Length: 431
Image (tube, one colour):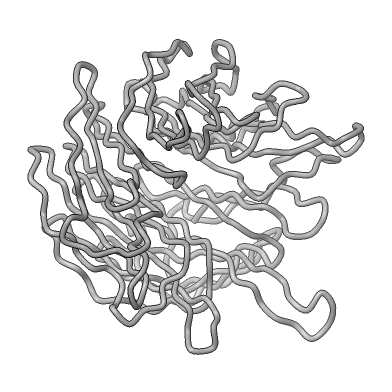
């Protein structure tokens, strides 16, 4: 990775992090101390998220409730940690008495961000400035209920696109909507029929969005610009899937060439596939990412760099029934790299910088001989731009569902939920 070369063994321990690395470090290439993101006396759920702008400032978002209040109503909360280490005050994004869940966040080049979440069977969202201040009012994005599984991407200049699924007259539809930098809303964009499965959205450096979603018998995608919405592109027509498709992910390069990954269900085995849809509209044949013999698990992760090279990590059940991780590179030209076995783990997440240097984070449930007979460890592995995975580094032995994002030059911010009560949200940046 940039400014890091293999050298002698370096071992360190820093406030909740244990790792062993084999690298020489520049002045900035070190892990920070782990810190508590959420407030003392609050209990968060297991869906924190992080978005890092191009200066390295991180917006951290989570859902938590105040244990001192009756009923412990949850609220979406956020704060910013700058690249220099300054931490802003916690901002509460959702109103008291609501039932929010599943926040998602994205930022533009300078740190102005959009956060969306599910609340009271609707999808809502609001904008946050680079300093962590709220911009404009809370906005209802969905047009019908129930509405669920929102995602969001923000263009380099600040235009946000949210996507979700909602029920209209008894049928699921995929819907998208713009949120301006000042919080104003565009008109709802009905993308087409869908399912309750989460859609996916990404944006290129020119501000063109790609939205992809499952539609039972296939996976489809559309491009959305400031003036147009493309026709739906069916990605999966050569693939038989007896139980439909799902777990859609999307990544785009600087010019808008898209990689869309997804699971096919039914048949002998569930599989992980990738489709490559160029900015000119050319669709390559789907590529099988997992082996035909894999007993694929529920979760997989995708990340794409600005040159169009991607990393894909998925889970499978091994012969003992435990979940293990596998990963491989998919080049911009469509060449699949060798599959790397990554050991036991679940809930993977990936981030790649502009040039393809990256990080994989995941958690592993580790059995032990005394009650409660297991603990959950969150870990990280660096990834070279050629697709080689580094050694596993334990971030914490008391944490689950880690998420990661990066600035352009491979310095990563990780967020997770502490496994033990009161389930504090924790974060670390490095290396």
